[in-house]
Length: 187
Image 1 (cartoon, rainbow, N blue to C red):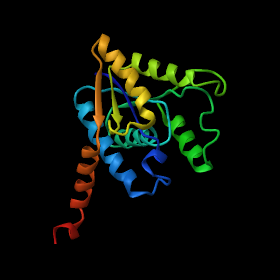
Image 2: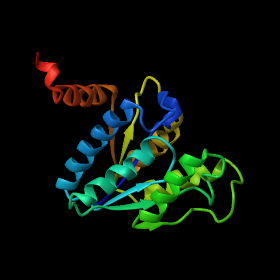
Image 3: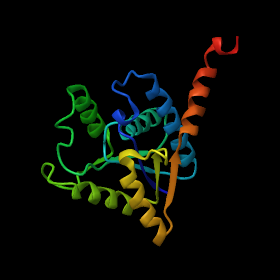
Image 4: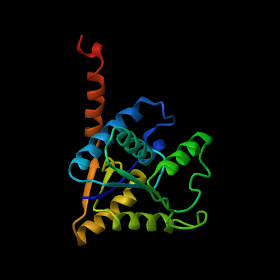
C-alpha cells in the first residue's frame, strides 16, 4: 500500500483537552509504530483531513519521522476551507503549522462549511485515493470515526481495501512500553 488514510477520535472524545496530556504521548507512540510498520511495507503517503485529535497527532508523528530521515509524505485534505475557525487560538496555530508543513494541502470544497455532505464527500475522496486506512477506534465505542469506518467497510465490500484498527489493546502496549523505559519501573 502506497497511500493510507489515518483517522480516529477527536481529542475531546478521548477526554484530552491539552497537548501536554500524557495520553497524547501514548497515542503518538502507537501511531508511530503503525506508521513505521507501513513504511517498511512501502507506504509513501499519509492522508488526513486535519481534524483535532488523532489526525493532528498523526501529522505531527509524520513530521517527526521525516526529521528522523524517513521518506514519508503528508497530505492534508480538509472537507472545506477554514475548518479551524471555531477552534481555540492554540489549536488554530497547530493546524496552521500542520497545513504549512504538509507536502500537499487542498480542501475538498472551496468556501466555508455548508453542510454535513462535505464530511461524507471528504471520507469518500480519502478512501478513493488510498489503498487502506488506519483508524484509532474501539469498535464498542466508535464515536465520530464510525462514519469514516462505515464508508471504508463499503469500499472493502466491493474491492480490496485494507482497514486496520489501533485498539485500546494497542494503546495499553504503548503505555507499558513507555512505563518500562522509566528506571523506577524495574525496582
